[in-house]
Image (cartoon, rainbow, N blue to C red; front, top):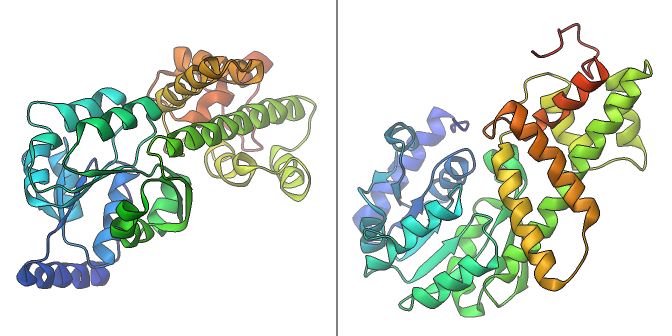
Length: 322
């Protein structure tokens, strides 16, 4: 579960929610309050937005302290702007287009797509949700930045649609980059970003194991990376937080990396661009998922390398994972 706000802050948020409800202002809808959605929803509430939420986990809804809805349709009946942060294309199709989905609600005027699904699905939603505007707004930065309200939002939407939702998006974003007015373009940008991020982690883990096998201190290796040209998001964040500590809890599952990788390859194939390095990176995560399981954290990609080298890449005296 994502980190909650301090109790005193939560009390202030609750009072603001009551005031907004009393004013008759339309609440904001939020569907999907998992590792990323939960802190993003918190940030919306902290900025004074009353929320109506729907999620498959009643415990998450209770922990958030927002108003609950029994279905996506009910969210779209009660809210004008609805944010969706879901883990798969199938989940999005059910929530948006299902028999009790968002398109059945009559009040929704703005649909905000937060996940990474590829452009085709967003374009389909834009064409199907004819009574509302679609804002393509995937985020990057990971769970830690979501908790701190320091995500980067990659946005493609019409100026009119964005004018309405900009303050809401800014509530959880340190940066908002508008890449196009065409919904779907932000998806393409996010997939490009994600393959670079995945490659950074995979190659950094390979280098870390090679260095450790040569007798170098893994913590020192990472220090050199981060003071030199090898620095990247994995060496700055994921490896120190989740690999060297052996916690393997960065917050993104291997299945998510593979989902995004498959979408990237489809875009690359459609464009006729050979991406052999990206294919090798995705294959590394596929091997990890076959051993660790698809729900294992993406940082477990290092464990197959450690086993092959008969070591674990950490200075801590822990046994090789079984």
